[in-house]
Length: 320
Image (cartoon, rainbow, N blue to C red; front, side):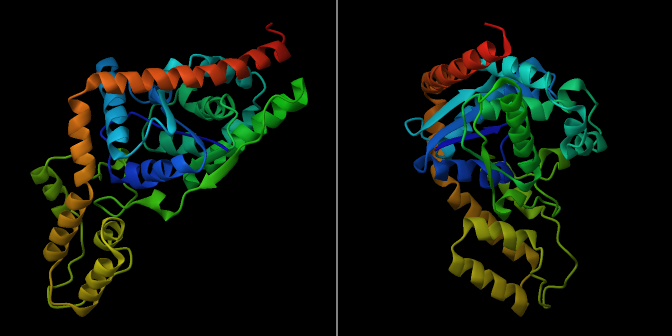
């Protein structure tokens, strides 16, 4: 089983990235042939600063490796090192029905958030389809908000197969659990777009300041605290033991403790949870050549498969 997933280098990685995409991807390393890429082509739809993009790509590579991605188990590479994916995206574009792409909610959502409309932003799902199909992927782990893009990849694969003969297998989505909806400081989904994130590798003082800034209600210290939709409890569930989470839940319901106490407990658990990743990250920062070699070897392996797929497609459509 071949697994494909990507992550955009749009800034510092945060808890939402880790629990929503990175940790599930790392867990899948032992269940199949995993291909994970840094989606720098995709990031061009929103990031137009070359030095920042290069820094973000480097940062994602280091942070993903620090979080537990094992290049001996996974193929890890930059999307732009596989130039064939852009060619396949163009070929898919020539058959993609306008109505199919116009129905994509991601474009409408991003425009509603104030992003400038562009052809790249509109055709984003086609490039994502190329990412999926070029590696002959079987499984695509995605959040609920990305499921439509996998369905589009399947639709385009069917369209190509009907037009040119059997070229692509149909990938299956693997919908992430609710961990893809990690709450941010304000209770909304944690996202850089909302400026409500807790970054993975902040220094101790900065991370504590972020945690202590979590928005809470005005319930007094002595009264019980609501547990439904509590950002503190939801984040604590990911970094504390079930027993410790149960104790905090009981303390919420009992009353007598202020939110500041719970935030400090959350920070301490979070800081301890991330300690092994911080240590691994320090090692990687001292050995930049290792990161370069991982991405280079990953690109070579990915290109071998992508070139084989693309050559078959070229011949089928008449380009060879």
